[in-house]
Image (cartoon, rainbow, N blue to C red; front, side, top):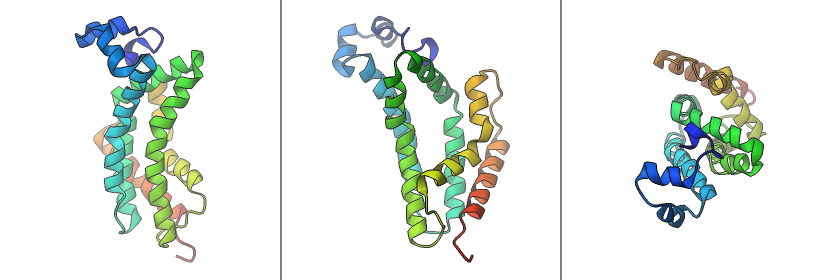
Length: 186
Protein backbone atom coordinates (compact mmCIF):
# COMPACT_ATOMS: atom_id res chain seq x y z
CA UNK A 1 0.00 0.00 0.00
CA UNK A 2 2.90 2.37 0.69
CA UNK A 3 3.93 1.89 -2.94
CA UNK A 4 0.47 2.59 -4.32
CA UNK A 5 -0.71 5.36 -2.00
CA UNK A 6 2.44 6.79 -0.44
CA UNK A 7 3.50 6.73 3.20
CA UNK A 8 1.39 9.66 4.41
CA UNK A 9 -1.78 8.60 2.58
CA UNK A 10 -1.62 4.99 3.79
CA UNK A 11 -3.81 4.58 6.86
CA UNK A 12 -3.74 1.73 9.33
CA UNK A 13 -7.47 1.27 8.72
CA UNK A 14 -6.85 0.69 5.00
CA UNK A 15 -3.94 -1.65 5.74
CA UNK A 16 -6.10 -3.63 8.18
CA UNK A 17 -8.92 -3.88 5.60
CA UNK A 18 -6.55 -5.12 2.91
CA UNK A 19 -4.90 -7.62 5.29
CA UNK A 20 -8.31 -8.68 6.63
CA UNK A 21 -7.25 -8.06 10.25
CA UNK A 22 -8.15 -5.48 12.87
CA UNK A 23 -6.33 -2.17 13.30
CA UNK A 24 -5.52 -3.29 16.84
CA UNK A 25 -3.75 -6.36 15.41
CA UNK A 26 -1.66 -4.22 13.05
CA UNK A 27 -0.61 -1.98 15.96
CA UNK A 28 0.25 -5.02 18.07
CA UNK A 29 2.45 -6.46 15.32
CA UNK A 30 4.18 -3.29 14.17
CA UNK A 31 3.77 -0.60 16.86
CA UNK A 32 2.67 2.05 14.40
CA UNK A 33 3.18 2.99 10.79
CA UNK A 34 6.94 3.50 11.21
CA UNK A 35 7.25 -0.08 12.48
CA UNK A 36 5.31 -1.42 9.51
CA UNK A 37 7.45 0.65 7.15
CA UNK A 38 10.58 -0.78 8.80
CA UNK A 39 9.18 -4.30 8.32
CA UNK A 40 8.62 -3.66 4.60
CA UNK A 41 12.17 -2.31 4.28
CA UNK A 42 13.50 -5.35 6.16
CA UNK A 43 11.50 -7.61 3.84
CA UNK A 44 13.27 -6.19 0.78
CA UNK A 45 16.69 -6.29 2.47
CA UNK A 46 16.17 -9.85 3.68
CA UNK A 47 15.50 -10.95 0.10
CA UNK A 48 18.81 -9.64 -1.26
CA UNK A 49 21.28 -9.68 1.63
CA UNK A 50 21.60 -13.49 2.11
CA UNK A 51 21.73 -14.07 -1.65
CA UNK A 52 24.49 -11.47 -2.04
CA UNK A 53 26.44 -13.03 0.84
CA UNK A 54 26.21 -16.45 -0.79
CA UNK A 55 27.43 -15.12 -4.14
CA UNK A 56 30.31 -13.21 -2.56
CA UNK A 57 31.66 -15.88 -0.21
CA UNK A 58 33.93 -17.30 -2.88
CA UNK A 59 37.69 -16.91 -2.63
CA UNK A 60 38.03 -17.53 -6.36
CA UNK A 61 38.69 -14.90 -9.01
CA UNK A 62 36.42 -11.92 -8.33
CA UNK A 63 35.16 -11.33 -11.88
CA UNK A 64 32.63 -14.19 -11.82
CA UNK A 65 31.40 -13.43 -8.28
CA UNK A 66 30.98 -9.76 -9.17
CA UNK A 67 29.21 -10.58 -12.45
CA UNK A 68 26.73 -12.86 -10.70
CA UNK A 69 26.22 -10.29 -7.93
CA UNK A 70 25.75 -7.56 -10.54
CA UNK A 71 23.08 -9.60 -12.31
CA UNK A 72 21.19 -10.13 -9.06
CA UNK A 73 21.57 -6.47 -8.01
CA UNK A 74 20.28 -5.18 -11.35
CA UNK A 75 17.27 -7.51 -11.33
CA UNK A 76 16.48 -6.64 -7.72
CA UNK A 77 16.97 -2.86 -7.93
CA UNK A 78 14.93 -2.61 -11.12
CA UNK A 79 12.10 -4.87 -9.96
CA UNK A 80 8.70 -3.15 -10.19
CA UNK A 81 7.99 -3.79 -6.50
CA UNK A 82 11.21 -2.22 -5.25
CA UNK A 83 10.96 0.71 -7.68
CA UNK A 84 7.42 1.43 -6.47
CA UNK A 85 8.52 1.24 -2.84
CA UNK A 86 11.47 3.54 -3.49
CA UNK A 87 9.14 6.07 -5.12
CA UNK A 88 6.98 5.97 -1.97
CA UNK A 89 10.08 6.49 0.20
CA UNK A 90 11.20 9.46 -1.89
CA UNK A 91 7.74 11.03 -1.72
CA UNK A 92 7.40 10.52 2.03
CA UNK A 93 10.91 11.78 2.76
CA UNK A 94 10.02 15.30 1.67
CA UNK A 95 7.60 15.56 4.62
CA UNK A 96 9.39 13.18 6.98
CA UNK A 97 13.17 13.01 6.34
CA UNK A 98 13.56 10.25 8.93
CA UNK A 99 11.82 7.85 6.54
CA UNK A 100 14.58 8.18 3.95
CA UNK A 101 17.28 7.67 6.56
CA UNK A 102 15.47 4.65 7.97
CA UNK A 103 15.16 3.15 4.50
CA UNK A 104 18.83 3.74 3.69
CA UNK A 105 20.09 2.28 6.98
CA UNK A 106 17.86 -0.79 6.94
CA UNK A 107 17.81 -1.39 3.19
CA UNK A 108 20.57 -0.35 0.80
CA UNK A 109 23.30 0.07 3.41
CA UNK A 110 22.94 -3.58 4.41
CA UNK A 111 23.63 -4.65 0.83
CA UNK A 112 26.50 -2.17 0.55
CA UNK A 113 28.06 -3.67 3.67
CA UNK A 114 28.01 -7.13 2.08
CA UNK A 115 29.67 -5.85 -1.10
CA UNK A 116 32.14 -3.81 0.96
CA UNK A 117 33.15 -6.82 3.04
CA UNK A 118 33.80 -8.81 -0.12
CA UNK A 119 35.87 -6.02 -1.68
CA UNK A 120 37.93 -5.69 1.53
CA UNK A 121 38.65 -9.44 1.49
CA UNK A 122 39.67 -9.25 -2.18
CA UNK A 123 41.96 -6.33 -1.39
CA UNK A 124 43.53 -8.14 1.59
CA UNK A 125 44.30 -11.26 -0.44
CA UNK A 126 45.62 -9.24 -3.40
CA UNK A 127 42.87 -10.23 -5.84
CA UNK A 128 41.81 -6.57 -6.28
CA UNK A 129 43.29 -3.19 -5.43
CA UNK A 130 40.57 -1.46 -3.38
CA UNK A 131 42.13 1.13 -1.04
CA UNK A 132 38.83 3.07 -0.73
CA UNK A 133 35.97 0.61 -0.27
CA UNK A 134 33.07 3.13 -0.05
CA UNK A 135 34.11 4.74 -3.33
CA UNK A 136 34.60 1.31 -4.92
CA UNK A 137 31.04 0.34 -3.94
CA UNK A 138 29.74 3.53 -5.58
CA UNK A 139 31.75 2.79 -8.71
CA UNK A 140 30.55 -0.82 -8.90
CA UNK A 141 26.89 0.11 -8.48
CA UNK A 142 27.23 3.02 -10.89
CA UNK A 143 28.73 0.74 -13.51
CA UNK A 144 25.99 -1.86 -13.23
CA UNK A 145 22.96 0.39 -12.73
CA UNK A 146 24.08 3.43 -14.68
CA UNK A 147 21.16 5.59 -15.66
CA UNK A 148 18.77 2.62 -15.85
CA UNK A 149 17.82 2.93 -12.19
CA UNK A 150 17.22 6.69 -12.21
CA UNK A 151 15.28 6.48 -15.45
CA UNK A 152 12.95 3.79 -14.10
CA UNK A 153 12.48 5.54 -10.75
CA UNK A 154 11.27 8.65 -12.56
CA UNK A 155 9.51 7.19 -15.60
CA UNK A 156 7.03 4.53 -14.50
CA UNK A 157 6.34 3.75 -18.17
CA UNK A 158 10.00 3.00 -18.98
CA UNK A 159 10.25 -0.57 -20.25
CA UNK A 160 12.02 -3.11 -18.07
CA UNK A 161 15.44 -4.30 -19.15
CA UNK A 162 15.40 -7.51 -21.12
CA UNK A 163 17.23 -10.54 -19.80
CA UNK A 164 19.92 -10.00 -22.45
CA UNK A 165 20.32 -6.34 -21.38
CA UNK A 166 20.67 -7.37 -17.72
CA UNK A 167 23.24 -10.02 -18.62
CA UNK A 168 25.28 -7.62 -20.77
CA UNK A 169 25.09 -4.78 -18.23
CA UNK A 170 26.29 -7.15 -15.47
CA UNK A 171 29.09 -8.59 -17.61
CA UNK A 172 30.29 -5.18 -18.77
CA UNK A 173 30.02 -3.58 -15.31
CA UNK A 174 31.95 -6.38 -13.61
CA UNK A 175 34.65 -6.36 -16.31
CA UNK A 176 35.10 -2.59 -16.10
CA UNK A 177 35.21 -2.73 -12.30
CA UNK A 178 37.88 -5.45 -12.42
CA UNK A 179 39.88 -3.38 -14.91
CA UNK A 180 39.71 -0.33 -12.64
CA UNK A 181 40.65 -2.28 -9.52
CA UNK A 182 43.20 -4.75 -10.85
CA UNK A 183 46.02 -5.37 -8.37
CA UNK A 184 49.04 -3.09 -8.75
CA UNK A 185 51.45 -4.52 -11.32
CA UNK A 186 48.88 -6.92 -12.77
